[in-house]
Image 1 (cartoon, rainbow, N blue to C red):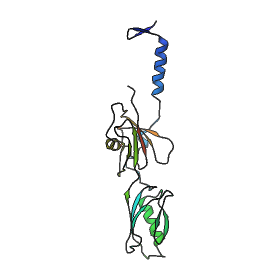
Image 2 (cartoon, rainbow, N blue to C red; image 1 turned 30 degrees about the vertical axis):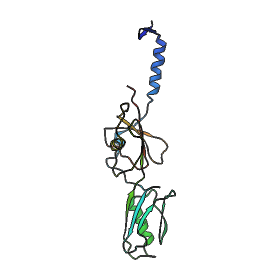
Image 3 (cartoon, rainbow, N blue to C red; image 1 turned 45 degrees about the horizontal axis):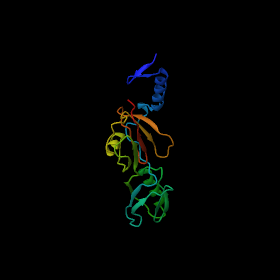
Image 4 (cartoon, rainbow, N blue to C red; image 1 turned 90 degrees about the horizontal axis):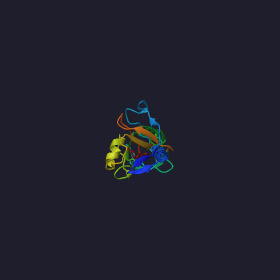
Length: 194
């Protein structure tokens, strides 16, 4: 028995092949469980491309703005290179205090703040794909909004994120809990099929 498609005979085999093709297009993926999502944004770790402001009270020669280099270090006067990559702001502050203590200052008081974060990247079914400046406590929903919103083809219930430094992207269901974005992350919004 043949099915009719626009008034023409349509063999059953073609229906099966068409169905298999559609199911292959809608590839399966494992979604990160809501229980694995953090309630608060994770602590930010510095990395190449970040710009920090270092202030050492009473020692003007060290004060300034420093870019974290590709090797993950910042070069400070008096104490040389300090590893910033992978450090939180507080831990970098502690490293600078340790290096200044004793040899240069008796009681160093240091302040470190992030001036410019690495950008995040968003692509797929959004209005304006590209790189965008990161802001503190950014969520996927806010990232999509900064890229002009979804296209009419977008699957707005799932986002795929490749974390900076990781090889594989993971799927996150949107709407359950906030999905935090970190600097350097790549967000991909897929296409819905029906």
